[in-house]
Image (tube, rainbow, N blue to C red; front, top):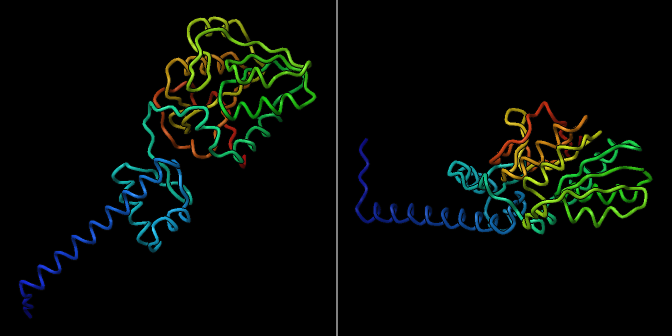
Length: 254
């Protein structure tokens, strides 16, 4: 059977398809714009924002993931991050607070009285510094964070701050002077942050100089732990500082 479609009907059909494509592009733009501000969103967040069906939303998210505009994660999506991009301390502080608090509590349980500890710069290690200060542990601590120094005030703690150049974005002390000082120390335990982690590629961070500090701290420690919430797992970053077998991962729900 041959079906004939009049020119007017065909034109209307084409126009409707174009309108649907425009609506899809508008929806996808709104999703990306939202993620640029919030960096991560749940399915519920996006359904409220878009006022569309869940099947439509999932189709949009799948298309955006194929376009590498976002990354699908459990229960939602997050913005695809430039491998060399580094968020500021203030941006990191407001992200995944509950998960970081849980990770810091687990990390504290790995420390024994009398240990010599390395504390990397970062927001999760900053929460660990606060817990250490509130504990009854007698410790010697080496850190490359000016912010951590202000949190480690109890008389039970002997604290050394590495010298060098301060990277203002992350509050990390980096450079050859810091590396030279760090190389003189041996640690019972080290806690370092990471921007990305998986078993194949190891622990990663965007900055070469920060990677050098983290990597040396891992090598100088009897036990080295990477503190990373689940948003970092499976993520890639620019510079690897440790193989996965060199460190133990601490994440929420460990």
